[in-house]
Image (cartoon, rainbow over all chains, first blue to last red):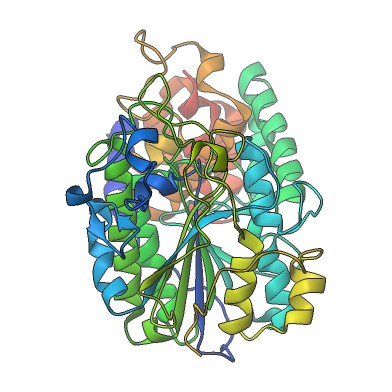
Length: 399
Length: 96
């Protein structure tokens, strides 16, 4: 006699545990060796904690409560340090395969996650001006056509990758959608049951709607952004990008950066997150192996955080923050910034690090120098209205 | 095991309140979660290893509760996998 429970146990042991292997993603041969990975840190990563301006005379006093002592950090140059949780990245910095862009911000001043992430990803001068993402438009300009070289790692395609250019996505152990005829059969079986019947009808309607708007099912995302998942996502991204027939341009998301309370300084919540980020990025470089030398990884967030600590030992939504460039194709080993300073009268709105570099300027530098996208196409199609966007100082890509 | 439990919406140790997970039918069956649940059952059906006939299994599992419509749908399923899928997602299996 097989019980309901016994049946489930058998099927589960046989199936679910083996469902984590890499799937075969259908992509055509790439016409370029270059790899580009965009990592979006959602929630507002505190750039002043990741790369503290140790040499700034106002740093210790204004950051009181969260300031890191110089001895507890890793010096990058005379003015800037790196949080010690990012120590695994130091080998890249020493090889000049890492650069930090500091005091960088999206073009719109907003303290809303929603608007700031939107403008970070749509590539316009303001939130909600464009429906598609700049990475998708860049793929169209590169003219990779149907090759599907854009890859989203996670359960949904982030807005930056959404648009008319076909891209592919991958998530670990994704359970495939049910076939429509199964849902039809169940629909008639559920009919007499008021709860099941109605739920299935509503669910199918909603799925069609989100499918039409987002091109993906909506429910399964969220958890994939949890910080602990980053390393395994980075590993998968690395393997997929390293494959000769694989994708070339990928986006990965990582959450957990909205540190309003108890963010900690040298240790604590933010320190843990930075450690997970560094380990994930190292895993990515490991998996990319020989193609790491043709790779640029760009790590960005929607905004920085307030300079001063708030009443709950955290920081609030700020303006400018820091971005990380990593990879064998980076001409780094330096902090690229026009440092505005932390003097009270230099702060944006009296509370935030003031922006001196435009995020679009950073992206344009990478797309132009690394992926060889012509400047005219960048100014007209990928980042419309961005001609005056301030680019980071100096050369960042090895040419 | 964790992943399917998360998909089903009730990850252990993450209940929304100290009272634990709610136990009324409407809290267990939302439109989204029902679709996820059907997907998971379909996934399990594809991986099943039993040699039993789906109809025999339905008889054993449901006994007198089995409805004629459900047995008919299992019999008419286009494949063995589809038959198991209908069995696992049937109202008898999901709600008793």
